[in-house]
Length: 165
Image (cartoon, rainbow, N blue to C red; front, side, top):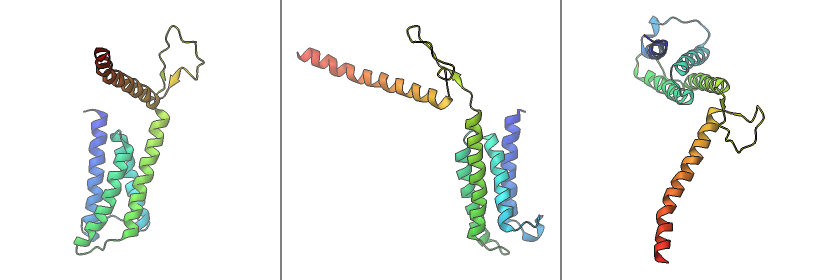
């Protein structure tokens, strides 16, 4: 089994454990006695960071786990021994937000720099100008796709104007 699959399974299991802790019987919980808000913040921080390692879109993972924090807190109103609490839900969502933003920053900082393709007629560039980030290379690809599409759209119009003359 690959390491990526193991991490994905661990992240799903950890979300399941948080759901059980939120909705299971209150007297079955192991409590570190840090306080409700701190426990929710740290729990969602750790689980979100694990999930961000497993899945490539940390901001989407973070948004999903922020919604999960609110949903679990709202579902506590359906249990006989719990009461939903908005500040506690916000602390869980804050932990998920912090972990997802930190993971996004970490992933962007570690993204590989790719060399630019130099044509024979372009002047030699300095070492900083030879490399671009992955985001910059996608922008370049997108702009060339737009130029190609615009050229393809102009061809029938140009042919029609030539025929009309």
